[in-house]
Length: 257
Picture 1 (cartoon, rainbow, N blue to C red):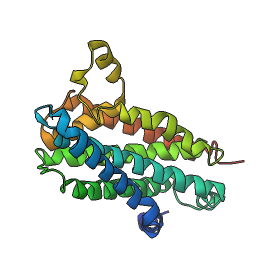
Picture 2: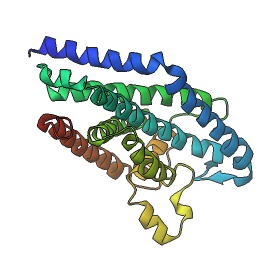
Picture 3: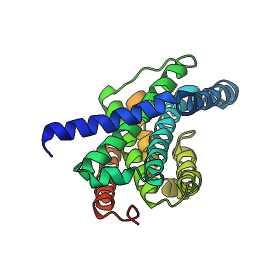
């Protein structure tokens, strides 16, 4: 398969994924924006005014980067896990597997679609947040790099979940029992400097903490953890996830009956 044919295959998968989530935008784009808008009202205006400052900023300004990153993580993950498992369930993924399309093109197409949905929702949530706080990005390069790597990482993770899933129930187990608790305990709503030393150590085992703090550093210029270490960690996790996902696609494990 030459380079032009690979580009056609990749662009076809990406267009299919983008059309999928934009066609049903009331189910894919609107709900997370409404949810984050409620977070802004409750934690920003109602509760935040009583909390005061955190990390040297008003609570509303502090919590906004965490909520944006939470929407990017959830939507990148959920888009790929639902789309790829649907293709697996209807056995249309087998048509891709028997075609000359390389596995890395299949993976890149689905991951690009998931990452685009996560970034689009993140952009809309950012726009909504401007009605509640004046946000000025301190480090644009770091902000864009962190949000892009995080969206890609969780899109790949969603694809791995979809490969292993045997039923529609299986694609909700990881988001419900693993992803959501890790996100809520990942420093979205608070600084870990408020925690006792032991729980600070426990929190530092949560990889989402580093993504949220690296993004918050890009927006506000403050972080509870090392930025260089956070970026390196996100990149390493992404490489590991990509290699493992490619291995699963190449071997056909959990895909071939």
